[in-house]
Amino acid sequence: MLSLLLTFVMVLGMLPTIAFAAPAESSGVYQIGTAEDLLWFAETVNGGETGISAVLTADIDLTGTDWPGIGNYNSRFAGSFDGQGHTVTFKDASWGLFGYVQGSSSAVATIRNVITAGSLQRSAIAHNAAYAHFTSCINRATITSTDSYVAGIVGKVGGIATAGVTKSDVLITNCANEASITGHDHIGGIVGWSQTNTRLDGCYNTGNIHGGANVGGLVGYLQEYTGTCEVKNSYNTGRVTGSSAVGGIIGNMYNGVSVANCYNAGPSTYAIAGNFYNNTYSITNSFFL
Image (cartoon, rainbow, N blue to C red):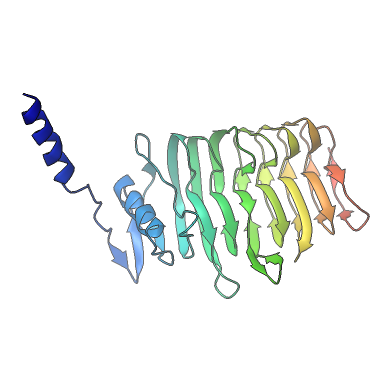
């Protein structure tokens, strides 16, 4: 009996692993309409084909799948992704839609028109992003995490080290978070943490945001170490709570960060920013309601 069991186990080990079939293409862009299609796309990017592009053709429910996120530390997504207004739903997933996203200074990665829903343990749209533009993305997934660097759109802005300086280009336009987010430090409705060239324009948060240090309705921690770091034409109406540096718009703002044409109408320790590092920051035409 034991020998039969061992033989059966050996045979199972020799069977090929299940591989998802490639979805249809149109003008070189993959047409993603099922959970299997999206899993194939994630596995293909994570396997090294980082520059491919896709559009969603339907809402997709990833409940019950072992979702890996699109892009990992060694293979970062560098293509384009258009959700076309469709929703991707998760259930207690350990990764949001994208893991690591990184284009280049000459060809940024683009992610647009996608909605996330359900429940997550990490940032909804992207865990880490560099040289990437996000447009009209909405998070409606509740995020409950024990990690730092967590947000509805981008958890942490990374970059490429050049002569000892990290450079990047992250533009987030007309994006929103509409769900509650709980994490450790550097928690925000839109961005968790950035030190380089990060611009928010036309964004909003309506979810309750809770963490430890550096918690903001829109951005947890923002420092203009290189490039331009700004938040403009944006607002928060969610409750923002934390242990230190808690603000309705930004938790902690350093150096030349600017806030313009923004308002906060949500309960928070400080109306606009929880902490300022020096006198080079700028806050104009921004109010607490």
